[in-house]
Amino acid sequence: MTVHLIAVQAAMRLADYRDAETFAARVLELAERAVAGLDGAPKLIAFPETIGLPLLLTLGPSGSDYGRVAGSGRVTEAAQRLLQTYWRAVLGTAWRFRALGPEALFLARALPAYRAYTAAFAAAARRTGATVVAGSSFLPHIELEAVRGTHIADPRVYNVAYTFAPTGTLLDRTAKRYLTPGLESHLGLSRALPEAQHTFETPVGRVGVAVCLDGFYSSVVDRFDALGAQIVVQPSANFAPWTRPWPPDPSVTEGEAWLAWGLRAHLQGRLHLRYGINPMLVGGLFDLQARGRTSIVCNARLHDAETEGYRGVLKLAETDDQEEIVRVIVPLKPRCRA
Image 1 (cartoon, rainbow, N blue to C red):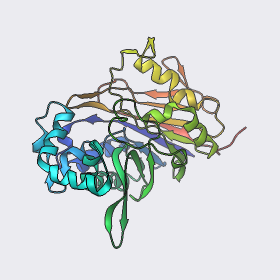
Image 2 (image 1 turned 90 degrees about the horizontal axis):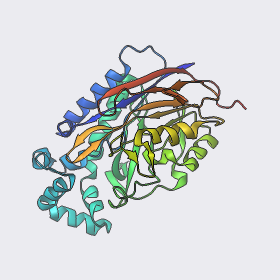
Image 3 (image 1 turned 90 degrees about the vertical axis):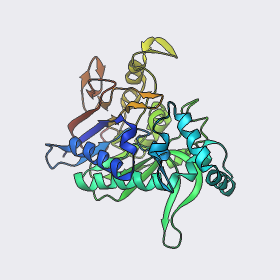
Image 4 (image 1 turned 45 degrees about the horizontal axis):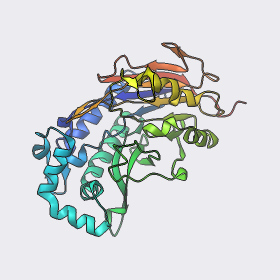
């Protein structure tokens, strides 16, 4: 059979997070653009890392805080404004869950952000009939249960990606294992255990999700291949200039390093893995500027391709700072061919 693999290089704009309805409309617009004109073959749409994160700043238990944070020059300033207003609630959350620092703020605002994030992507999956990997957000483990309703079941906060079936039901939650030094490691986020990174069946094949930095680690991709995954989705957000010298090796650029040593490289020679989808975030939020060229890559042993001199690249976004939809239609054969 053939399947459509689609990566959304989405632009981050604070105005899109004004309230839950605005966010849902924005996600739906992107999803409908992603599938426009395609035939009835199974589809997978992948969104970038942290696309749900701004909801933690703009949505609170009492409603929208967009007006409160919109004038901030920095993310830290926006967080300080919220703390000044809701310090009692944050302190109560910190005491209840024994949480410290930014983690307490995330927990105090987790439920409204979770509801808006999951509702938006579930609706997009239903409308488009596609499997949707909904980027990620910083959230604890949240459960829906008859007596307690929607509640925080485990207060540890993760960078977690949700995946929705074409029916709009939740298929999987995959938390990030390897945290980005500095940014994530200072925010009180927890690391996923290796066994939390699993694979799951979808209409486009068996999928594994590696949130950003996880896709650079061979052990993560090893595990997905051993579990029989055919596709790895790597939602990413890179807050560094795409053309800057790469700090570990200044002889190459940031963008060259992603292609040379990232998911494309780790797919080569695999037994089961055929394709990788790496949607990148672009645009600006306060002082954060996201840059990156979205890519769809392949195991060249099973599906030969080359783009811009890189073997195993099916398609690249044209820019590193503009919103784009990157999509391919590819064959999907039985998982194992020795």
